[in-house]
Structure formats: C-alpha cells, structure tokens
Image (tube, rainbow, N blue to C red; front, side):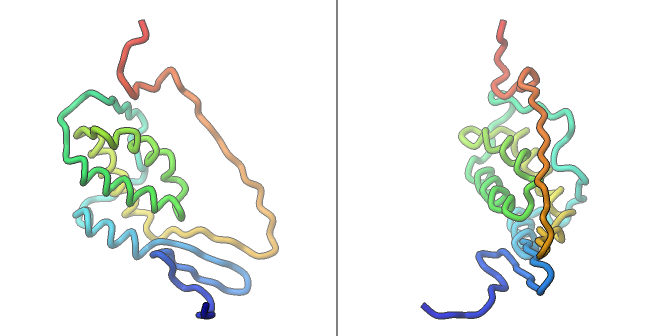
Length: 151
C-alpha cells in the first residue's frame, strides 16, 4: 500500500477539503453523462418529474432497453451526491425490464433536471451536529405502476 495523500477525485466523485468543510460533488460526471446521452443542448427543468406523472408498465411503444438501462444506471450512481434524485430514479428503475417511450421520456426529463443541478454538492461542516429530517408521502392508492384495475 502507498499513501497518496488526501483524496481529490475518486470514481468521478470530486472532494474539496478545508479545515472547516468537506464538499463532494460529481460535476464532471454529470457533464460527461449529459454528453454521452446527447442532452447537452436541451433546456433544463427545475424539477425532476412532472407533479402528476403516472407511469404504467404496459402502455406505450417499446424502446431500446440498453439505452434506457444505461441512463438509469448512470442516474443511480449520481444519487451518491444528489439524494434528491432517489425517488424519481427509483420510480423509473421499476421499468428496466421492458421500458416504454414514456419511461424514456421521464428518464430524459431527469437528465434535463440534472443539467440544472450539476454544480450542487454535499457539504459537511466540522463541529456542527445536524439533525436528519425526512418526509414521506405514502399515496399507495395513486400508484398506477401496473395499471391493473382492483375491481
């Protein structure tokens, strides 16, 4: 083993460290991901999903599953430094076996949202104790994931 000093970049996670703070981000990873999927020239969105989105398993035209899986896999890796993506990425990842056009559109919308958040970073301060607060919205009645009637 060899001591190479403090980490600055590891697996495309950038680390900026001072005595008071540690910042981690994936800005370079986001830029390369947007370029890879041809999303650099599109207008960005301020939210990752439309507020009334209802994705169905069996509706719409089938799309290339390989491309869809690549996008979703890249987005899953991005949740390391952007935890706000956990819900929308988890939602579209349910459809990786047989993605449809509407699922791909949602994935592309998330990419367009990511283009507006590429400069975000997680900030850890020394000497400050933070309390984790979480919220949930459990609307299982509105989950139309398989679009089957329960009647």
